[in-house]
Length: 91
Image 1 (cartoon, rainbow, N blue to C red):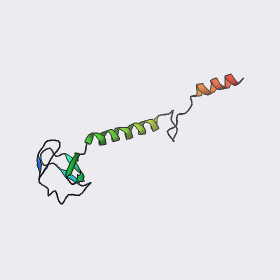
Image 2: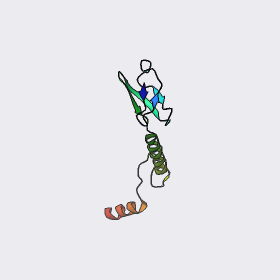
Image 3: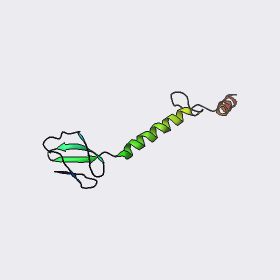
């Protein structure tokens, strides 16, 4: 009998039939659990926080692309004032 690492609830699964990488769900806390090893069976919770962080990073990248001072490759553009200063220095 397996136990949820989050809430210690019993998970009704035959330990001989699970495979590494398989995703199980806890019937009590509904946490998704990944089988990280099979002998003995070890379960690791799959964190929703990681998914949320990835989503936030994607949004930040999209916001950066929308800004006027960034070109389509995400590189910063020089300000016009900076270019004028460079021309003045060259003279």
